[in-house]
Image 1 (cartoon, rainbow, N blue to C red):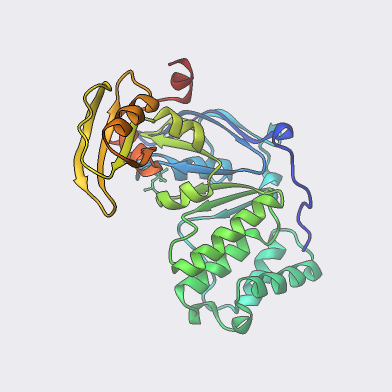
Image 2: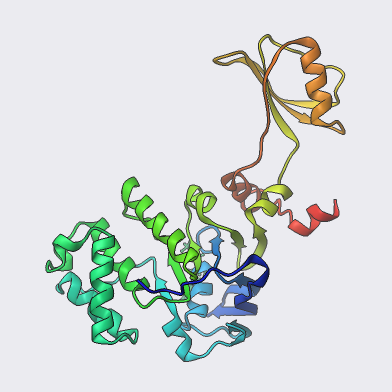
Length: 324
Ligand SMILES: Nc1ncnc2c1ncn2[C@@H]1O[C@H](COP(=O)(O)OP(=O)(O)OP(=O)(O)O)[C@@H](O)[C@H]1O
């Protein structure tokens, strides 16, 4: 299978997509309010946000299904043009397949609509049916397949023309854990072969596993953007789980007790937030009073960060963290 056959060095990556200050209004509702973002090539970019935040409106603006009233979108450094849709693959949340059509026939048809020759479309259809374990069903009508199998057909139809930019809206819905892993592996493989993937999902574990960069949209605005590392760093709270063989009361190290000492399998665990003290200070005091079995920082996960930023309105930008 030929794709792009090269891997771009981190330092040489350009932004395949630049969204600059777009605003989209529907009647009296502003779905996107001056949203800007930059998506580097060959990355998996997570688009997060609560229901109604504006994610689909943003995706539809990128795929030119709708036109924003204000702002500009650049694809590969040039203003977005109608031909760019051939270099994109969009898996919408609302799936749409011709139910009465055969599986291979349908993929072939959609591949040719995306500009592939009949010969190339046939070769790639064969490759993908094999790869996603759909070969035995190639002649079946789509309506006779299970929901997960139909999702695979739709996934193949989205990637078959080897788009430079893949936009996947909830790509794991309808998949059992094994098939979800299969799709996850494909997403990684496509990224490694040169594709850039925008992933919109509410499944935080998928975001943690897959995304190199993340943007959080809330109430029509982008409120957070950065690498997982930067975002998690910005939301660090200086909390540590301390496990000791006997219960310990920390008195000399300035701290706040988050969770009091409780019996766990091998000892006693407490969670402590350090106040103007270093982890070494805590470790020193703990080792003086007991045997330390473990001490680990509580790094917030993406779910906690999402709740904190969306529900509690506590948005911490990566820049703020740098300036702290
Ligand atoms: N065609 C439309 N006409 C009027 N309002 C719309 C239209 N499409 C979207 N909206 C409104 O714009 C807002 C943003 O919707 P959008 O679908 O972009 O959100 P979303 O982040 O994708 O949400 P979800 O996670 O629920 O899919 C919502 O309040 C929605 O009701």
